[in-house]
Image (cartoon, rainbow, N blue to C red; front, side, top):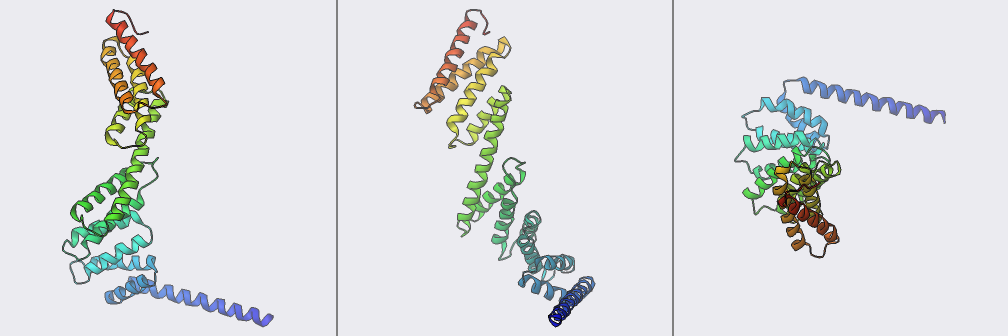
Length: 275
């Protein structure tokens, strides 16, 4: 039993020594001027899935090989390592840079896709800022325009659908947030924008109803010289809603808003107030 413990201890010490030797050798290589050895080691680490080590070597090699024969290979595998390490922000930048540096490369189409795809993967939850999502959509659409027959198009369309749905959800909740906090003018404009941007949305009926209600609440709390114009918009919005969703469960509530808007307009025409 004691002998077995000694064997395990020796094995542990040997393994630690090997790690230390390996680390020391890697650090020496990283700091050396032997760029051929660095390139070979970087490719070996890449093929062994040791991407973090390969990344440091490829970074080190980039400046040395700029404009030289291996520059394209280094740029490509550097971006691939970043992607495989899930550093999507930096990977997107490097793939995009690749397309600028090597516009005649056989990998150009793949690099353009990967730049957009990494931004798609880096796209945050819908509740957060969607700048990256919009950039990814723009790049995906640009890719589709340039390579419409690409084998990547099914994936491009899937990513676009997913990202557009994310933006749609964010825009709806933003508009509803204004409505919920009684910021009716902002709610009205936000729902109007939502309806223009997403004409096929499954939430179109709901958005049209909240736009109608927000519009009415905004109108009756406006200055008297603005009420007539804004109440007329409410009437118009009701007509659009009722013709689009004649069987809506919200139709009775919408009709009630319409009736109040018409009554307010009549009162204004007779020289009264809408209070």
